[in-house]
Amino acid sequence: MNLCRIGKVIVPVLFAAGCSSSTPVVTGGDGGTAESGQIQVTVSGEGLGLEGFDFPPAPNQESYFSDGWEVKFEHFYVSIGAVTVSQEPDKNAADQSVTGPAVARVDGPFLVDLHKTGPLPGKGEGDKAWPLTVIKSQNLAGDKAFDTAQKYAFGFDSVPASATATKVGLEASDDANVSEMVTKGYNVLYVGKATFRGATCTPAADPGLPAEVYFRFGFKTPTSYINCLNPDLGQGGGEPPRGIAFQQSQATIAQITFHADHPFWNAIEEDAPLRFDQVAYVAKAKSKGTAAATPVTLEDFVGVPFNPVKVGASALADRTCAPAAAPTGGEMSLDPKGRTVADLAAFMSTLQAAQGHMNADGLCAVKAK
Image (tube, rainbow, N blue to C red; front, side, top):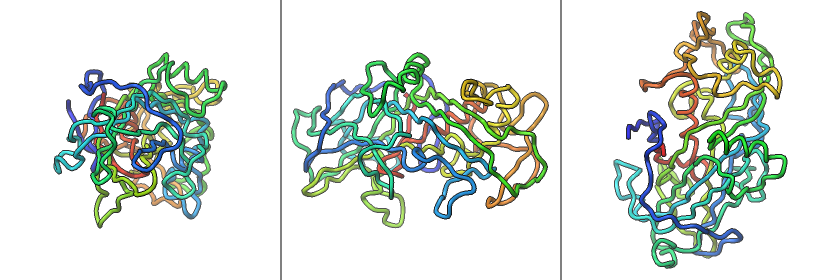
């Protein structure tokens, strides 16, 4: 498999079927309350999944769209497959994806809308999370108790939605969206609306983009997130350590975290500026996005160049709005950082596939399934 990196994260160059695990399939996993020596697995889209992106940004808002867009979600569905605990998270210092043998696994699948407010506290201040499962023992190693004196590697999969998935916090009103995800093979689905709120922009000329854009982005990017770093274990002046270290006299939390901002970065690198003008531009060119019934979709970006962004002969001017710094001028281009990416749809998919983390910001080795 061809792999590349976004920052310190290993990511696939292309997404294709073919990778599979030799780990035995073990169904089950108990919900409910975890006890000391057990792992409570939760999932969160953090505050951005719940609240979206304001513009102008609030004083404490780090992530915002530098081209003046407010982006709000109606739904942020994720489909989660196997959750795996393995030995030896530090087995290979040069390759994060290498661990010892798997000792516990819960297959799922689970389906959750991270725009819905979960009942548990999340890892970030004010964040909320949903409970997925409790891993009570080493169910791939004779059901032995975990050795709480050692660290274990933690990983999880994002898989195409299944009609038999455990629906976490979903309601009857979600059924049509779930059915679409199953039928089309989506593992992640964004539904929402963007509204242009920029006031002082450079260049000042109106680019003629719509002021509102409804979007519906379904991603077919089944991915394994392997041996995640764990911010709960501290930074130590660098990146966090790998793996899970058990808490004393209480359950250990492993929060699967999906960052909602990834598909909108303007470069294939960690924490790049967010842009939405390219979405509005394609929506206008294809007469989409003017209403919830006719949203612009990821399929509309297939074949659209991104460096520079262009539909037909017309390119999109680069624009930012205060408080973002003024652009260097010229045409809007998204930066693949030297990677080979086919079009705007593939660019967004590559970014989205690296959005899975542990305990808020713990980066994982990422491989296409």
